[in-house]
Image (cartoon, rainbow over all chains, first blue to last red; front, side):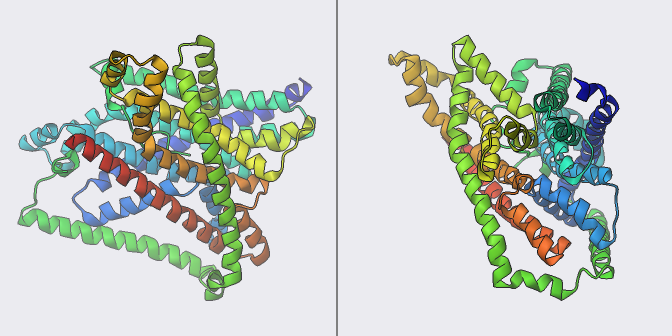
Amino acid sequence: MDAIRENIPLLLQGIGTTVALTVLGYVFALVVGTVMAVARVSPIPPLRWAATVYVEIFRNIPLLSLLILISFGLPDVGLRLPYFWCGVLGLTLSSAAFVCENVRSGINTVPVGHAEAARSIGLGFFGTLRFVVLPQAFRSMVQPLVNVFIGTVIGSALCSAIAVQEVTWVTQTLNIRYAQAVLMFLIAGAVYLVLSLGGAALGGAIERAVSPGGRDRSRASKALDVTAGAQA
Amino acid sequence: MSSTATQVLFDAPGPKGRRRILLLSVLSVVAILALLAGALWQFRSNGQLDPGKWIVYLRVDYLAFLGQGLWGTLKVTALAAVVAFPLGLLLALARLSRFRVLSTLAAVWIEFYRGIPMLLVVYAFLLALPAFGVTFPRFWMLVIPMILVSSATTAEVFRAGINAVDRGQHEAAAAIGLSRRDAMTSVILPQAVRLVLPSLILALVTLLKDSTLGYVVSYNELQFQGKTLVSITRYLVQTYLVVSVIYIVINFLLTRIALALDARMKARAAAG
């Protein structure tokens, strides 16, 4: 127990860093991913291609490879970032690709008639998306976006491999110093379980709040989504 | 596929619209090229475009070195998949079982390994267990965590597949007098496994990505082999870029196969 008492500030700092990595990475990924999704359905071909290439690269690269490339590779080409921001950048780039795919397939679940109706009352590309399609698409996107959040939580642990002092790094360092393995694993495991289960619970609450048809509807829509859980 | 929402978000453009699209296209191409040029400039001004630093990746011995890593990656991925997928199926059946204890145990196992990072499991094998006198060879320190984590995610895949089999199939099986168990093994499961085939290929992609943690346990898979190569050649960006491209290509192909299979099965289901 001394191992904890003497190192409370360090542990709290580690937990804080994990939360910060996750929240920043996820929020930026939501923004970037939505922009990419809009680009992928836009009438401008080069933007569509660029977004497609982006998604294919960043959903297929292992997160660890990406983090290593960013944190150790960028200084070689003259770009220096603090390791924390390398972690945020890596998490953002990778999660954004998954957000983009989920937003795009969410857009496809909105009945075609709605987009046609929006166009017939004179809304343009952005108006149709902003006022008619995306608000409805969001409903079917809640569950997949929760999965991306959990992916970001779990991914943030990999930042310890590039020396970001988040909770995995802190607990393992203390573990080596104090040989309190069980205790340290309990702390780290609890942090991740609370974050990911908490995210899932919050997502469930949001989903119930926004879905008019109750549970049946949300069950039917995720009948078999092959890409669910495909994020590392 | 005639009418998905993405195709009715904008009208077929008229002459003015076409001019605008053309203008925006040109602008975005310029912007993208400017970005790429900026990246190349950054590489050049730091001397990273020196052909000498890249040409080595055409040499047989370097490629053989990386190939060794790739072989290691494929080996751990295949072994983990061969064990984890059947284990996942068993866990899914256990979670759906009527025995409360069994289904609770399975649920705890699944939620636990889905909720914590694989890196933590790897550290348990790398740092914690040796303290209790239990040590594994590096190969198993990578493969066992991969199996544990993947069994949990594939269990959920199988469960979704079993739930996706039409309710009528259960009823039909019961109507011809099959027991619950026989119905599961000879009616539901064969259909469920077919349904989840694309998801299993994507689980393979996840396993392949997870195998990069060999970097942490120092097992000779591709990412770690890249690290070793960097410590020999000092060509850091180049090596890690080459390694990443190899991962991207393999995963891209696997994802393509999974999505094509999924599309074909959906099309067939829609037709029949």
